[in-house]
Length: 319
Image (cartoon, rainbow, N blue to C red; front, top):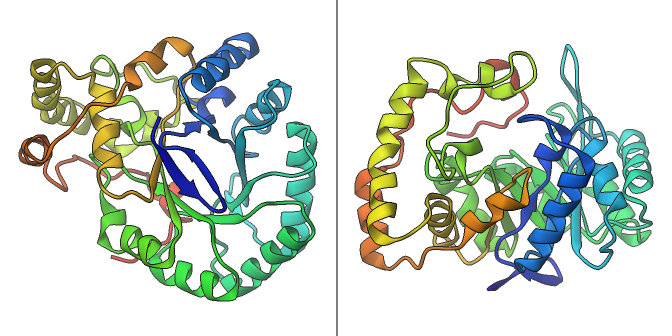
C-alpha cells in the first residue's frame, strides 16, 4: 500500500476507523471485531483510529485486546454524552480521559491524541499547551483536532505543532475543500478524512433504510431521512453505474477519489466485518475518471445536512 506521512511516522494511505466496533451502526461482537482488525492489518493498513466515546469505551477495549502493538494508534476525548451533550477541553479532564483510554488500550503511550470537539469558551492555545505537556511527558506522540476551522488550526499550530486534523470528507461532504485541506497542506499537517464512504452510502450495495431507532444515529441524520434519503440514492446511482462499467468497486472508487484530493490526506473508512475490506481495493483513477465523477457527483449534490442540529452545535462553522 502507498505510504503517507502522519507526524513523524509513515502509515498506509488508508487507515481504519473503529467507530462501528462500539455498536454505532448495528450489532457486533468482540470476535468479529478482532478478526476485522487482523484482516485490515493483512491488507496493509497500519493506522487505526478510535475514541473514548465509541460504545462508551467498548471500541478502545477491543483495540486493547488486539495483539498487534506496533501499529499507529489514535484515540480522542472531549465529548461527554448527554443529554445535554457537553464538550470539555480543560487540562484536568483531558488528563483524566487519556489515563482512562490508556488503561482500556493497555498502553502507556498513544501515537496520536485528538480533541474530539473544541470547547468554544476555552482558548485553543490553552488546549495546545496541555497537549504539548503530554508530548513532553511521553504520554502521546502528537495531537490532533477534529471538526475545526482553519483559523483554529492556525492558532493551535502556532502554540505547538499539530500532527493531524480529522474532519468528515467524502464525495458528498466537501466543506474541508473550502480552506481546511489547503491550510493543512500549508502547515504540513495531515488531514484525516473520517466517514469517507458516507456512513455506508458508498458501500457495496445501495443502502437500505433499516436503521435502529434511538441507536443508529443515521435514524435522525437529515441525509438519511425521507425524502432526502431516496433523493440521495437516486443521485448516487449513476456513480454506481460508472463503477460497474469501469470494473471498480463503489467503495474503492470513492476512497480513491478522496486520496486523489491531496497527498497529505488519509481516509479512515470503517467496517464491522472483514468481508467488507475486500471492497476497499482502490480504483486506479486518471484525470478523465476524476472529471467523469465530477460531472456525476458535483460538489453540493447531497440532499440534507450531514448532521442534525444537536451534533452541529459542537462543530466549528467557518463558511
